[in-house]
Length: 328
Image 1 (cartoon, rainbow, N blue to C red):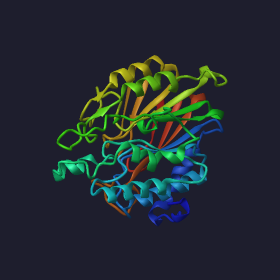
Image 2 (image 1 turned 90 degrees about the vertical axis):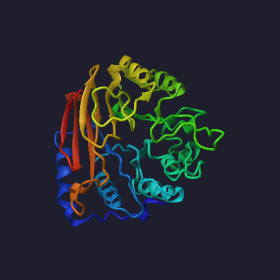
Image 3 (image 1 turned 120 degrees about the vertical axis):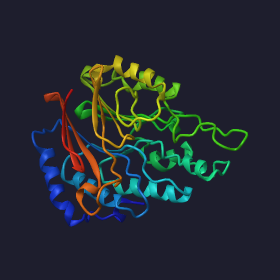
Image 4 (image 1 turned 60 degrees about the horizontal axis):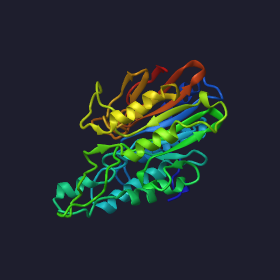
C-alpha cells in the first residue's frame, strides 16, 4: 500500500493539539537538532483509530523537520494470521511519509505466536516468522539502513544521519530461535521469551559503535530503540528478563560516551531511569486502553529532539501524558 492511499485529514479535535505540538517542538531548536517520532504499542486493528494517529504523525513530519519515525513494536492486536498481517501492514504503511523513513521495532506480540497458544492448535498456523517480517517490514529499507549482513532476518539494524553525527540503532529484544518441536509447536514463544542473540551482541559491539570511517568519529551519538527494555532492574511494568540483556548492557555501558539514550515501549507507561549515566526511557502505549476515544488523549506518542549543544533530550508528547526534558 502506498502513502497516497492515506490522506492527511485529521479529526477537528486533534487540530489544536497538533498546532501546539509543532509550537513546542520548534522552540529552542536549530538545524543540528535530531528529531525522531517514537510511536509504540499501537496494538492496531484493521480500520481502527490508530489510523488517525498515523495521520497526525504524517502531518507533523510534513510541518517540522523529522529525521525518522520509529514504531516501537506491538503493531497490531493478535488474531488470525491473515488479519494480523493485514493490520501490521496497514499501520506501518499509514505511517509512511515522503523522505522520512519509518523504522519498525519487533515487539513481543508481533510474531502472533500467542494465537496458536490460546487456540491450542498444537502447531504454528498463525505464527509470523522472522523471514516474513523482514519481507513485509524491512526489505523496503535495503540500501537505506545497515543490517547484519547475512542475517537480515535478525530484524536489527542501524541508520545514520551524517550531517547531525547521529546513529539510530534498532535492536531486536525478541531475537529467539524459531524452531518447531516434535509436537509441532514452537520451542520458543516470542510472546514471553525475550533475548538478544549472541550474533546480535557481536554485531552491536563491532558495528553499532564503530565510527572509524566517519568524520569527527568521537562526536557521534547513538539513539537506541528496543521494544523490551534491555535490562529490567528498577523499571515499572516489566514481566520477563531478556536473555543476554546484561551482556548487551555491558556493551552499551562500555560505549557510554556515544550513547544519548535507550528508548523502549512494552510496559505501557512513561518512565525514566538513569543507569550508568545512560537514560532509559519508556513511552506510554499509543493503543486506546482505558482512555476515552474521540479526543486527543485517545492516543500517545513522543517527538524526541536531541539537542547535543544543550546536552538535552526534549520529549514532546502528543496525546495522553506530559512533555519531558532529560539531561544527557
